[in-house]
Image (cartoon, rainbow, N blue to C red; front, top):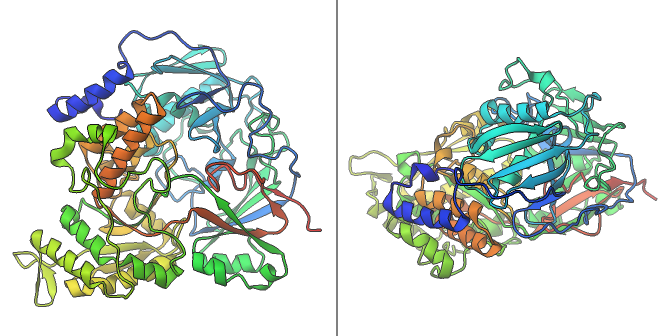
Length: 620
C-alpha cells in the first residue's frame, strides 16, 4: 500500500483508499485471522498450479544432458560483485547464479512461488503475516548451513543499507521474529496482500561473511551463496566465470530438476553491442538475442549460420510489452507540462523511424501493459476501471478517462501534421519560435540534454539508439529545438541516472503478468526522490499510488486487472515516455550444441529461462 496512511487526510484520495482498505479486509493492528496450514507454495491469486509432490517444473527438462559451457556477452564493464547495493557497476549474474531466495518463482504462472531454501510457507488468510520454515539440508557453498540468523540478517541489512529497491517492502514489516529452530515470521504494518510473496524473494546471504563490514560499499570480494554456481574466475571489468557447484545442496529439489544443466557459464563484457555481435559470429559467444527484426531477416548469412553451427529460434511469450523509448524527466521544469511532453511525442515520427531502422517489422508499444489482458482498452474507461479513476478525475491528464492514443506519424521524414500539432501545444504552454529558436515569454530558450549510454541497453544497441536520436533531432529543428546529446560510458551513465541527473534518456522497463509493489519503485510518488529508483520520469501522482494500493490488495484476478488497466491509463496519458516498438517474440540465435525445452513458459525468454533451462549436447 506504500503511502496509504500518509495521504488518507486528502478527501478524494482518502475516499478512494478507504474503499480499497475496506474491500481488502482491514489493516495491520486489527485482530489477526487464524493461520492457514503450511504449504509448499503460494500464489498471488487462487491456488498454485503444481501440487505438493510435483516432480519438476513443466518448462524444465528433467532428462537434460549435464555439462558443457555457455559464453554470454554483456555490454559495458563492471567493478563490483555485489548487485544488492546501490554503489558500483555490478555483475547482475552474481545475484542470479550464486544467491538463492526462500522461494522460487515459476515463470509459467503470473505470480506463484514454490519452496527453495524454505520447505514450507504459511500465511494468515488476510495475509497480515507470513512464516517460512527452512529446509534442514540448505547449505552455503562453503558447506555451512543456511540458518535463520542468516535469513534475518539478510532481510534487515538489505532493507536498511541495501539497494533502495529492497527498502519499500522492509518498511512495511512491523516485526521479524524467529518462531522455531528453522522458522521465521514477518508481521506487516499495512494491508498489502503481495507482501508474503515479496518476503519469499529476497536473496539470503551469509551473515558471517559481511557482518561488521560496510555492506553498502561496492567491491570485488566473491560472495558466498547457496546457489547452484560459484564464482570461479574474475577478470575485473572484462569477464566473469561461474562454475557449477558439484556439492550443490539443492540439485534434487523439484524446482531444480532440469535446471542448472551447464557446468560453466561465462560472461564476457564488450565496449558496445557491435563488438558483441562480431564475437558471436566468430564463435566466441554462444548466444545472441537479436533485437532488430529487419536484421534478423537479412543479416544472418555469416558462415556459422550458413553451415549450421548457429541456429535461429523464436520464443513467443504472453507477457506485457513493458515500456521502452525516450523518457522525459519532469523534475526539469521544461518537461513538467503535459502539453510539452505531448509535443515531444508528436514530433517523434515513429512510423518513419520504425521503417528506416527495422523495416517496420515490430509493432509500436501503445501502452505500458500492451500485448496482455492487463492493458488499457481503447476508448473511455468503463466499469471498475472508471470507478477507480473517478476520485482523481480533476487532476488526471487529459485522455486518461476519455481515452488516449499515440499519433500515427508519417511515412516521410517530415511529419507535417505532427509538427503542427506540436507547435500548437508548445504555444499553449507558453513557448514560441523567436529568431529561429523556441523560447518562453522572457526569451529563455527551450533547452535540454539527451543522455545516452555508449554501450546501449538490454534491448537496444548503442548505435541503434543513437540513430533514433539523430532522426529525432532533425525532426525537432522546425520547432526551433536543438537538444544537446551527451554519450557516456556505462559507469558514468549509471551514476547520473541513479541520481536523476538528465533531462531525456533511453528508458526500458520490463513488466510482468502480476504487477505489484515493484510498480511503486518504478513510478510511485515516494520513489521520485529516492536515488537509484526506477522512477526516472519523476512521477508523483496520488492516483498512481492509489492504483498500486488497489493492485496489491485485490482479492481477485478481476479486481487486480482493473487496477492495472487504470494504472496503465494514468501512465500512458501522462505522456512521460516516447515509446518505440516491441517484439512479441524473442529472437535468439545460438550455437547448435545448445538446446532448450520444447515446452515454453508463459513468460517466454524471461529471467529464469536462459541459461537455467538450457543444456549442451555435442554436435552430431
